Image 1: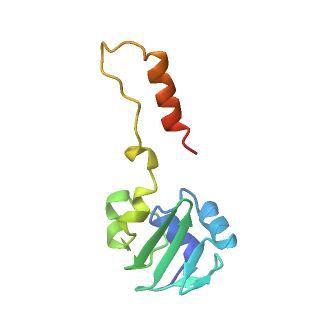
Image 2 (image 1 turned 90 degrees about the horizontal axis):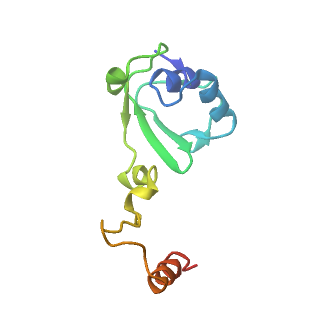
Length: 124
């Protein structure tokens, strides 16, 4: 069975709408076999799809092509996500950042502490 790439990406919930999937194809953000594809490109089982959604580049393997949208729990039956962990970390870069926590009861920073904090965050 073959399915259009834009329908498939919408059906497995990579994009919220089929028009968004089609637009991504037109902009060259969907790659199959080293080549950017058009929305009308048919896909078959076993093909590797690279989806560029900045800042992350997702990688999927087609298990079984489908045309109709499925529930989130059923997506794994049709596509396998092989995106490296390094890419997935890019989704939430603030998770590893310093949050500026100050212990309760420590009061406001002194002028000297404030300058040290500003110097630390304005390193560049």
